[in-house]
Image (cartoon, rainbow, N blue to C red; front, side, top):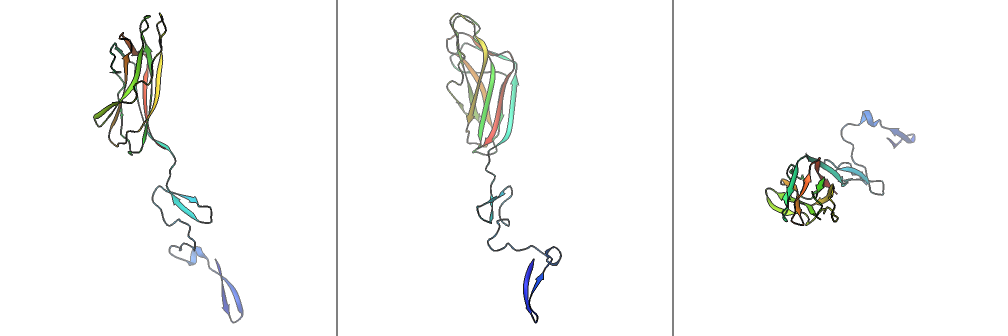
Length: 197
């Protein structure tokens, strides 16, 4: 750092070694840099001028992931949704503004050749109450006349529970035709991901 002094011989340049001659915290220069303020977890960002400012990390991120698997099978002929046994997964969001991404995949079989058809969806429960159906039908396995249909059924859903309590998700199935259908038999998987966006 250099500065000027006026002495008997005129103006003379002087220098100060900041690494050894100055102690304590150096003051923020005129205009500031924004470095002396902010909170834990923030970052520095350019403001378009020579100054820097603190800013929160607003980028979306995955905060936690939960997974549940099952090789069980559930059969039903009911026209009301029935819990698919073996998959029962809960997650506790870290923020009420978080989104929960719900992924599910399984095998579905109409077990016959007489035009049986079923539907698949998901129940959500918050803190043991407020049990709701996330969608009237998330997947509807197709059927064709006089043909047995067995194949993969899957769905993806983004939920906004607006809670920091325990949120429980359970896949469900029903029969649309009053005949028995089944889900499972091979590996079924549900994945929950808490995300900020």
